[in-house]
Length: 168
Image (cartoon, rainbow, N blue to C red):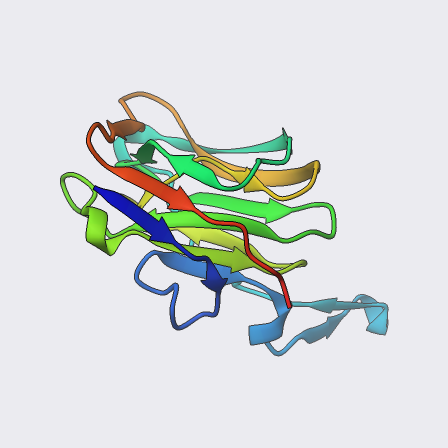
């Protein structure tokens, strides 16, 4: 079975079943530090404490992917959310499927995340590992601690392809 997926522009509505966007765009700031800074508060709900977990912050240095890109697997994290926020000014791609025991192929979606925007996957959302368009750095916030927090699903018969696109 061959499936072609075209990434669409992400927004807080079409991504909400998978997680949330992290962006100043959706928040009204509060002035702090005697007017020298604006605070954009409560941008995401990070959950890492399940099974005595804690929060870790990492930087991933991502190499660009080549397109068309074959999606041969998806992964999910059953015990914590996972944030990807670009440090560099760049877009990136996410490939996701809803929470389920295994990913449902005809429910796989792909989104283009614009510059200065991050995402926070909900617990249990299936996703492909980080898809950078250019060499770029990402702040990653996720769970560390006891218990297994990574489940992978390998596609055997499916030929899932993310095609090249134009960012407009």
